[in-house]
Each structure stands twice: as C-alpha cells, then as structure tokens.
Image (cartoon, rainbow, N blue to C red; front, side, top):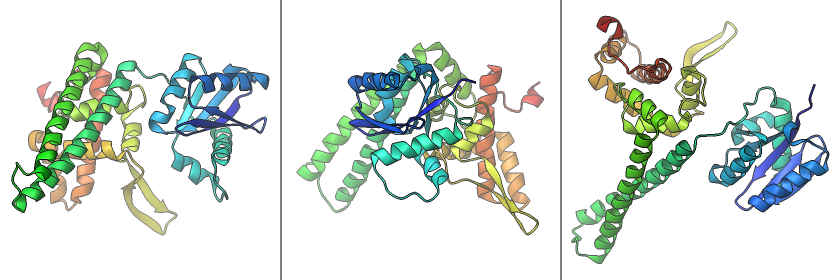
Amino acid sequence: MKKTNIIGADLSKKTIDLHCHDTKTHFVISNNLIGFKSMVKWIVQRSILLNDVVIVMEHTGLYSYCFEEFLHANDVKFTKVTALEIKLSMGVFRGKSDKIDAKKIAHFGNEKITKLKLSQPVEKDVKRLQMLMSSKNLLVKQRAALLCSTKEYQNIGLSDKDLILKAQLVVIKELTKQIDLLEAEIDLIIKTNLSLNNSYQLLTSIKGVGPVIAITTIIKTHNFQRFENARKFACFCGTAPFPNESGSSIKKRTKISHLADKQMKALLDQGAKSALLYDKELKNYYESRLAKGKSKMSTINIIRNKIIARMFAVIKRQKPFVENYLAAA
C-alpha cells in the first residue's frame, strides 16, 4: 500500500512553516512563488514523491490563495481544515508558535487522513465572484456605518454643508458608486458563464431565494460541487438539527450547532421570512405548526432547511421550482 506523507502547513502573510510528520523535520518558506519552489526541493531532497504528499493547512483566507494555486498547478494534494477542529482534537497542548502549530497540524492530518476530504480546483469565475462579493459586502458595511453616523449628526442639527457631514456624504457617494461597479461585474460574470447562469436561474425560481442568496450559495457550494447533498450544506450553514440525549435519563429536544457559516445562516433566515410572505405552502405549514404549540424559531429553522432542500433539488433535476408541485401535476 502506497504510503501517504503528511505535511502540516501553518500560513502567515509572509511565511509558511512546514512540518513533515514522518521525517519530523521543519522548514520555513516565504509565502510566494520562490518559497513554493523551495518547498518542492525540500520535499524531493527527503526522497518523497510529490504524488505521495498531502499538505494539511488551516483556512486562512487570502493568505493561502497563491499557495493553493501553486499546489493545484503542480498536482500536489492538499486539504483545508478549521482551526477549531484542530484545536479540539489536540486536548491539552502547551506552548504556541508557528513551528509548534505546523507540527500540531501535521499530527492532526496524520490521525485524520482517512476522513479528510482533499481540496478540488475551484472554477475561476467562482473564485472571482467570491472576491467581488467579499469586497462588496465590506463596502456595504462601511457605507451603512457612515449612513448611521450622518443621521446622528443631522439629528443634532448639523447642516449638509458642514465639513464634518459633507466629508462623510462625499465618501458615501463614492462608496455607492464602487458598490454599483462591483455589482455590475458580478452580474456580468453570472450572465456570461452558462453554468453559473443556469444555477442562478434555477435557484431564483424558488420563493425566498433572491439574487444575494443565490449568488452566495453558488460561491459557498462552489456551484454545487463542494457538498454532496442538502444535509451536508445544512450542517455547514448551522441549520441542521442534531439529537441531544444520553442513555435513558437525558432526552432533550434536538438542537442546531453554534458552529456555522454565520453569513449563510443569516441570509437563509431572511430568505425563510421572505418565503413565508409569498409561498402559500410554507406559510400554511408555518401557521399550522405554531397552532400546535411548536416554537417559532424551530419552525423558521425548518423553513430554512426546506429552502436548502429545494435549492439542491432544482440543481439535481435541472428544472425550475414549481410551487405546490403535486397539485400542478
């Protein structure tokens, strides 16, 4: 059986600490192309084939972007895990440094290698959408903060011509302009990419799924290539219920986990509330459940999961959602 060599990678803005679990060796490279090439030399010098290597790293946002591109281009296998997952698996562990963290990641990878899912290349347009949406969301938050600030100044009687207020209004105007430009490129990518546009049209056929939820779902699921089914995506979003019992003495109601993608969960919450206004089936279900004394929040969560199930269903069938499908048939 071919042996897998696990290398833990702790990434920072400028450097990457590497620890090879089998050889117990540590190596530091710069987080750029020169450093990536020196990593390959370091691996080869230890008589390890690149095909036998699996690099384990934490999710670090843009810090790992160029590194991932290099690994995909050179067919080096890697996987990304959450920092919390590694922390919870280690138990009591004293000391912290980049070198120690790389060792911990390598140890985690060696123990969990059979359960870890290797990262697959993501379509360029999906990556572009992700960065555009991230940039847009940042600017929207900044604009919202400034709008709140200007209202406070207006409430105390400052004129729009006052420099304090005028300066903020100018920035708000520019932010709005840049947000519009970002949205225009997002729309262009969706319209010109047949696969993304198809997914977008299918998703927006569902009541409660608007443009923002549709695009964000496409990004989070890598256009439905990242998650095998609706249940796994619901776990990712933090809407999937889990049992809460032990033996015969502890039997509590099922609960959702606080470990979730908070952005996606919040969007689904908005989508569920919107769906209740326009989808008769969901509205009737919601009202009948409340009439039985069920909690409002648990019912909203069920609606969120129904929306997730519908999204995966329309993608699988490649047909738009039809309200009250059985009656329509």
